[in-house]
Length: 466
Image (spheres, rainbow, N blue to C red):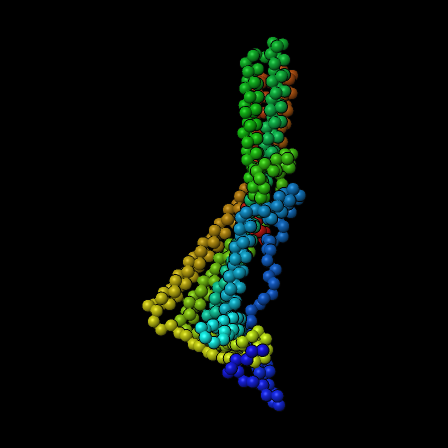
């Protein structure tokens, strides 16, 4: 081992002081860590794993009340692959990371360093010096500026969680609305097809009667006109069906044409069997994700004001370092020179041109903006709930009347056609009753679609149920 000229040489009959240096270094490092770590433990933050790391809707799967397995499958696909949901999940991860950055400011910071220096001169031996160091620092959050920053980031994290749930609820509601619309259009398409088949049958009867001289040719042309008009509705309905199917596929994170086979068969219009209360407590609005997010943003703004105020107060910091120097790597355990220090510092802004006061005013303005945004969110929520309740009441009333009208129109059309076949009624009566039946059947399908859509809008307005 090469010894530095200035290093003390061990004596055979006395303990080697160099052997005590590693122990001294360890003692200094341990004392430094205990001192700063003990201070850091004065302020503990809950690090319990967040159960909403992969959050879903807080409310139960409300769409299960429709008792439609295919609808539930489409919603499951949307929750996994919808781009808006994926973007909101990424925003939540960002908010969580920013919270962790704020937490780090209240914890002990340790860093290590190492270097190798080679010294060479024109005359004299070449020397190599190895250095190693350990630095530690911790800021005493006497006035709570760091804690305010953590509170700000925590509130923003909760707002991001609420925003994710809001996006999930919105996308789920959009999937259900598109699915209900698709089933409604399929019902209208079947009604139009059945009406067309009935009119084609009537046209054939009219042609037979005209050939027998029982009715004028005019009625044949009227029957052909009715058939052509009904047939003209089919392409338009088919176009709406295809477009709605494409929208549903995109909402569920798939390509537009991927659901053509799966949704080709006609299904019933999904209905919720339970009755909806006409009056819902206003406190139920607090479960809405946008309302909760607005509340959390107010909390974040309050913490931001507090942080800006406390940034003008003194800041205290403790620090320490431990350094070792040796001529060889093995010298770190025997013969290394040790240097250590523990220091404290205080800093306080004196003159900054009014920047710190301006930052306080900025945060106060942000707080006022968030309060106004919260009021707007609550008012919008109240309006959406009231509108949905009124629409549901009216749709239920319309449904009862249209069910009666459809039964009567069906009977009238059958009686008119029977009378026409017996020569007891003219073709105008048959044509009018068929048109009336078509209108009432389509209206009934529409109100059934509107009623289901109204339930979805109310559930969405209430934040996923009540």
